[in-house]
Length: 454
Image: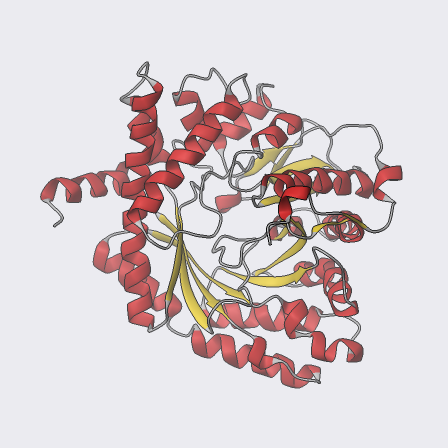
């Protein structure tokens, strides 16, 4: 039974500590939409999305009103398009038309983003998958709400280095298509290792082939709530610190569980998972970096940062799992630069580098996220960064990802403005030494020995 104290506590978290449900994401299978001609395929995709998600936005707004819980985004994820469109790959030059149909469907049902312009190529690429990846720059530059992702590796298969090399080139090409003053198209593109099938967060969301025809996944947030809780235990033992994070994560996840089950009931769609990731925003007090500094670090990036992040991630997961039987997606703590004011401050004061961020990704939820780099960074260097991050994911049996934004015409120290939840980012330096000879090799890096568990 919920008591009046818990009601007041939740109201305070919402009103004063930036607690929100970051997204309700409806996953929709498009496997039934496959057709041999592009006209039929596009018509099937549009009709499936607009019929399944017709009430998604209004339902989210009703829940916000009824329960007083802010729901920042309503989103859709679909089956990776490289699978759905394979049947008509030989009759088209690219998949840009499909991206435009996805974009139109998203606009017509009123969602913020639609994810799933994706390819899963961890072991090799078919012609259809390579066509999909090569379509990404034009697809993202000609749409507003479409998000793309490529899974280039996994613990079971190793890393497809041909795909890694291609993704570096695609990121550069996508960046070049961003005109001055435009939202950077690369912010809608993620390269994964061990991508999950049920992630509700963009830009990497897609609806896995093992998922039902439609499903509701919810992503919660709440770095500000955790940071406020830690203010009360400065100087306390690690045991007290861990218990505080764990109990706070439990409370945050229970709010998400309520919203998820209610949305699933009203939409008559199965409830999938709660993703309990601490997703920051540029708002003051809503920062993962602030949490780390509340633990006793002078600035994020200082010695001890990786240990503090490991503690945070583990306790968030322990608290969340106690609050919901269905925890999935990414779940933990995001460390984007542009979306976290504390991370931005740490970069600007010189305590946080790209190399330290890479070390932190060994223990966080995802990887190198929303990082602006000089516009003249070679594609091979970007591919090398992707390969490093994929290797961390492959060896450690966890999801890792890269979302880099080459800022054309910008140099180290310049600032790139994104706006909204995406914030802004200082352009960070990258290692100036070349990895061209390594990246130009063909084939794949094999799976690690501990992957063989059959």
